[in-house]
Length: 225
Image 1 (tube, helix red, strand yellow):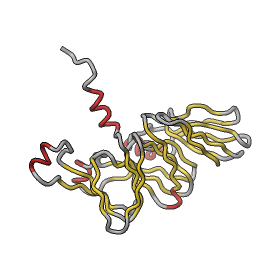
Image 2 (cartoon, one colour):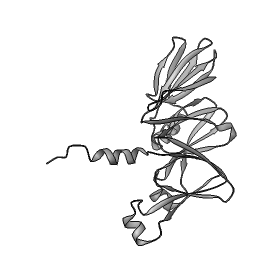
Image 3 (cartoon, helix red, strand yellow):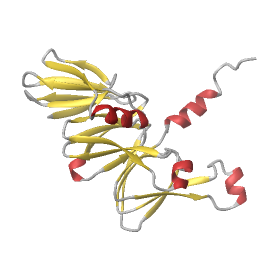
Image 4 (spheres, one colour):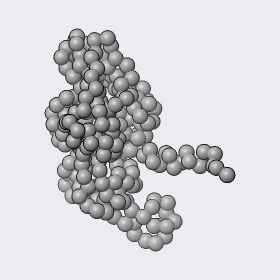
């Protein structure tokens, strides 16, 4: 499988498959495909798998795409302004924000990830349920805004605005902490809590979480009188 990411503000990932190769994608993600691609809607993982996908912000069905000839192309598009990030999950399991999954090779397992800490679930920006990608192969996820990748050393900690965590490797510890100082909490504009990420492992940060964008756009919508 070969791939290329096209565009900037609203990118697509274009995938070129060999005959017999397959990948699956979230429902509605496909933007164009060659005549040599066969598309088949599936309830991957059965009813239980469909329910888990629904819990993690995706549709209950996925679309499976299989090349019937060498060099057949299929492309998948971004839902919001942002970036598409390729992930080789054979190098390690990745935990993503809800809605992040775009498409993946069939050997990649897409599952749900439950926050174990009560505070992280309530105040960490992503809630209790996130997405977990593991297995063997390439997956592609959606990041809101620009994507900044960093690698944390063992014990190294980074404090991040709530909602700005796009993804992180499974070895990274995810927790929340209260902002110190009454003035900082109520006048600093950063809210009451920050997300804390502690290494080792890679993290992918997003510069414009969709909830922040929605909050900014809300001021320009006409209000009901």
